[in-house]
Length: 296
Image (tube, rainbow, N blue to C red):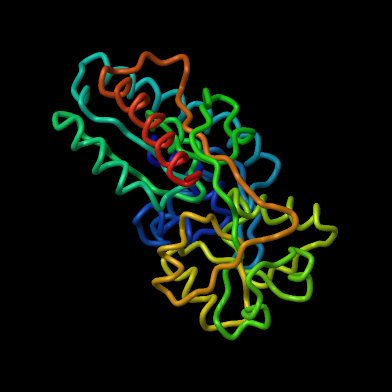
């Protein structure tokens, strides 16, 4: 049994799809399938149920995944701690963005300008894996309940707006009550993304269940999909420049007022490097200024 087989197994278990897992691992689907079959043969037990193109863990697989994923997390953390002890990357700060991705390039530019000897390594991912969260020094996110292991600091409050194409029936309205969107279909990012949770929460608050007609994991074509269809979406106010570049209309939601909170999280039990300490202070101060500018 090889460590790479266990990594492959956990990726397939998380993706529930052999093709998607192969793409994430940058290997062929046949090679991945062979590795999983070899692992099952070595264990003497099947780990997955295969239903058409989908694949999911069976009872033995769920038990194995629970144990192995924990072992891999510990191994990754041990590797990271050793690297910290050797101080190979003491000037590097790893930041994971699963919210406020629109501002990641600006954060890096401002931080590296203020601290030329430091380097910010950024990863943007709407649905980060447990390994992603463990490997980062900081995580910018909008769902503190999903990451209870992180120490959270509130850094940003932003209004949520409605976005749709110019030919949408609601295009003539300047402000919209959320209940007015009940007859229409929404386009949404993946279910794990906080904006999906926000959409459900505020629509339920307005007294209805939203019709979700289309999911997309591609943030680059998200607004293009609104222009070429009758779909609408709930988006953060600070994505306005992206929406306008795609000829998408933005409208404020009059009732209920919809806002979300963004946090910076870090592993409180870890000792931060000097560069990480500087980034934490820098990031909190930067977002304070952005909030003040938005209030003005």
